[in-house]
Length: 226
Image (cartoon, rainbow, N blue to C red; front, side):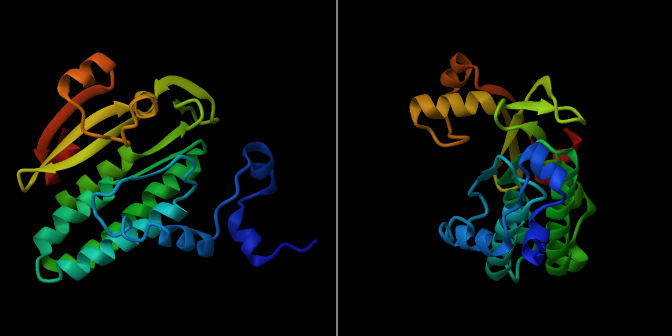
């Protein structure tokens, strides 16, 4: 049977489909599903987690929508756009068991962000902001197994390292707080207490529940330095 253009774009190889069940969601379906939560796709701080992100079909569409809305709102304020675009990139999380997908997804998200950032901020664009965006993407898009909640090696086998996500929160105008949590504890706590992903918890709850790992606070342009 002949392979259609749509089928070709949705798979990389028959071997990968057989081995990993890897089939990418088509653009039409991605947009239709994003339309179901259209308002959330416009908020820079609305968080999305794709547990089998592939090379970023869903995350790239969501990022474009967020950045388009920021450009509309802050067309005369490049500095505000820069700050909130960092928040937007920090709101997207992905896990994939295939390392080449993870690398492609990271590069795809950065390219989308950087093209929009450079076009909007022009002469006020900063290499430090670009480094911060790359750093966030590197921490948010993880080579791991979303079923076992563990990071994987180059062959896709589980390691002993748990998947750890960072929550990025803008505080005090230009300061950004990074708080690290294991994916396993986040999901366990959410199931038991009905808290959303990365919900704000009391300090004593974090310590007793073993959810919170570490926290850093710095200027949003200096995230890659901590």
